[in-house]
Figure 1 (cartoon, one colour):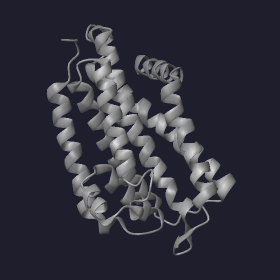
Figure 2: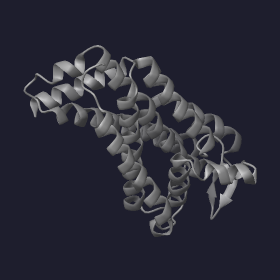
Figure 3: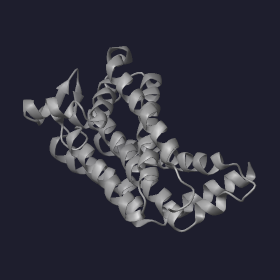
Length: 247
């Protein structure tokens, strides 16, 4: 356990030394919060909630997607190319320790980002939350597991760092702009709303926003089933294509 703990903190320090990762995980969500909150934050949505109140879960979804679809694939590809994954095979630590640490690091960074978003949101805009914290947390964990699993699948399929970076960023930005995390899907034309119903992150954003204002998780069994199905499929692909050595 001490070795795993040391590995965890070493990975945290490595993450903090990456300006790109730090910007999109900690600074970019706060910039969006301040920007959209200043322009649209006071708009009344429904049941006494303002735009800025229900924009918070969209930022959570964006951070999870960034960590899962960009950070994880690039880390795996980089460690594979540099031979770090190969070296892990000959250490006394079990193989799952490295993968567990990677997941723990991404969860930790998400929590840091989420706390920062909530603090800024409360101090600047006095955000409100009207949901069930257990239901919201449960769906957050499921969504996080799905996005991280997709990240491991992309990291397994990508043969080089450049491929992992390109694929991860492409998937992330397509999901980000089409899911409602950047622009509310209610502003999309009807045909685009129907098209984006097939974007997994759109279901994450929609459900989190409704849970945030107090709606029941039981009303979204279809979205839960879709997120869970993608999670299982991504885990199968990740296990099938994961390589410890560069081909």
